Length: 402
Image (cartoon, rainbow, N blue to C red; front, side, top):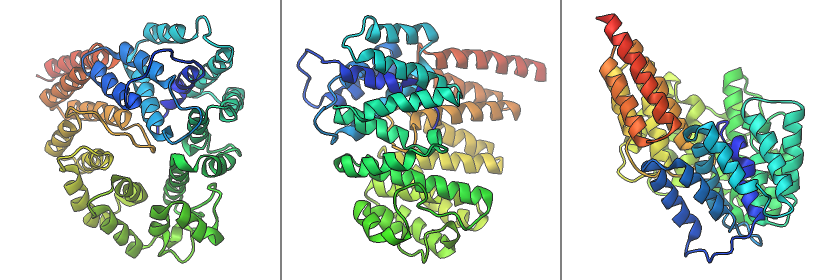
């Protein structure tokens, strides 16, 4: 997960304190997501953000069963506000939902917005603590959907890896909101983070379940709470990174290749991610990722596999492969949700890197075309404006190279 969510977390909860008087349509969250994606595709990112905020006012207060769908809306809203809206549009959005406060609790929620916004630009210390303290108030509040979503955010090792509250937030997700599914995802994300850090540090002693509320003696409880995670760790004699040997990795690749449940396949993708550039692992994994990346049906696993194939092409210096997979990533369609990260944000950043790489390799036409397609995907946005600037720069380089 990337640093998009803090910028919008409070806006996502601001409206939860407000009551929407109109009768919501059938499946309101799904309808709002579909409408927001259409607004973005047709060049109305501000309208998309406003409609998402309004539908979040309907977040169920008495149950967290819809928390996962709520988080999908948060991710889309965060992407929209952080990458598509300019600063005046962002301020107009804040004003629309906080001036004057609709209810007495809105001033507290806007305090979260201020602290979270500072966190989004790399703040630390007192600003982070302020965000934590105010978000804890929401997590303790009466609206279960908002409480659950806030706990999931606070459990993220990406944002709060150094804070001692993370393990407690995971415990609360599992105990207080078992029906949401976000507790299981919080445990998984922490395991992925532990594996990644162990691989980067080259140590096999890192406990895989560190920070999750589970330990070596809790295998049974872990499997009961999350059968997919339990299955993936079953062959390990001890739950440390050093036990992830080639035979385990081979089993994970085989599980990734199995058709069906995207939730399970996405889990094995993330387990394998730190190992995928290892020569031996790549030889087994790349054909599986290629098959996933060429699937016709949209899924989170397909989109992440396409990025992985793009990474392989970049590592190999295969510019034709880079161009091919970049264009596959830019194909139209509503991107699926993934609790691990914002796929839309990840795709966007990857395309920008690729376009720069191609321009540096003097493949100016390919670089310009990628920028044109990216601008067309997000018309009337900051992204489109940035792409226009990039095209002008590439055209100047092209002239200079002649």
